[in-house]
Amino acid sequence: MFEVGKIYKRKEQIHGVYGGQGQGGISTPSKHAMVLVFTSDAGENYGYQDQFRPDGTFWYTGEGQVGDMEMLRGNAAIRDHEEVGKHLYLFEYVRKAHVRYIGETQCVGHHIEERPDRDGNTRKAIIFHLALLPAVANEVQEPKASYGNNSKPNRNQSLAELRRLALQAASENSPKEQVVQNTAVRTEAIRLYALKRSKGICEGCSVPAPFQGKEGPFLEVHHLHRLSDGGPDHPANVIALCPNCHRRVHFGKDGGTYNEKLIEVINDLAR
Image (cartoon, rainbow, N blue to C red):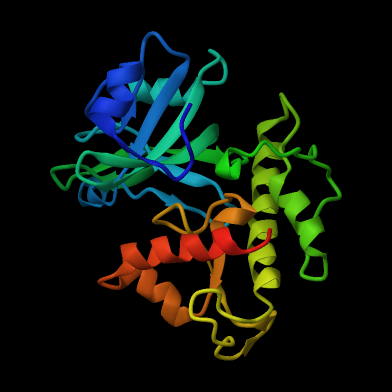
């Protein structure tokens, strides 16, 4: 269907194929079992503050630019996607008219909080909690272990053990609480996997970590196929970087080009 990390022209390659509303953050193609959601940094000017949370879930702001948001149309489509048998796909804008596919998600809840609307007035906004489902890198189908309550990643585990935890999926029809817990386990397993693989050496500049942290050599984990770090992904899509390299990829003038170089670095590593 969609390839994680791939950039699509929204109008031609998504709506031209599947239909659905071509504008706005939520699209509901009538002839396909899917709901498409789009996030962008530009929305912050209108109270849309989408972000990955420490537990690996993605908080996505519902639709409605003025006044209180209501659980109607696109908002209801997100909330009810599982009940009606539709897949929920998340995309992120990388530039005008172009979006990167982040992955398939599951809505595991929502809450209401006060946010400014387009006119700057305080209103009630719907914030959806989306759990990113396990991704499959490079189109290689890999077995995923079912989730177990005793699974908890730690830095003493082997790369193989951390990889297994990173790829596990919650059992089909699992309670949403278990999906959230599984997402948190995968997030931590992927982080520890990247750090252990690096052996204390920045995988960007090949220089040892600048200092020792509480967990050992201090490196930061960067998600290669997303502009925002923090959510679960795939062990092959993360890289351990020193603070300088991490800031460079996010804020450097050559950040985009450097990120592509880092992707090549990881592709050349034995996984």
